[in-house]
Length: 161
Image (cartoon, rainbow, N blue to C red; front, side, top):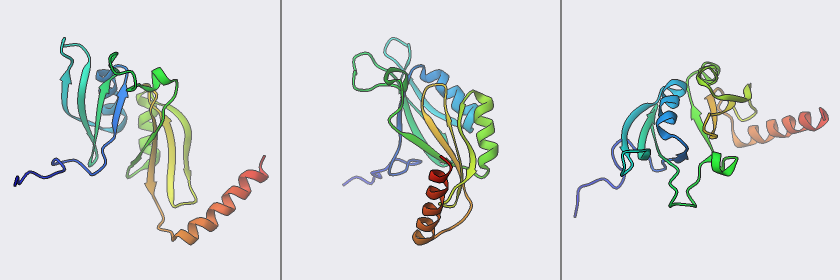
């Protein structure tokens, strides 16, 4: 029996794996936008592109690679003209992180707002098409309190239309 941990050191149970066009540029962007640390990068067999890379943001790892022509079901947002998932990044200061991401080249899609579930929350789309939420948890609420706040928020939205 091996003493090797089933989850590698530094990883969590769930690790996002992103596909992008130009992973090298994406790594540079994530360093500027979110303070990412590059952990490793494996170039393609011809020395071109990135077949696997790992970055760390805060205490979480993200894997990524370039689109690979031979893997048609492994597509970037650029190929799909949209993304199929978002990443929520909890940070100490939502507003500061939001502005840092926009200054680095992300597109603001929702300004930081105090949300009914107890987070300050904003959204950006990175230059590679992935959507990121930046959030700071500001209030611990019970499920009942969240439900009541949601009902009020949804009424305000529908009345404003």
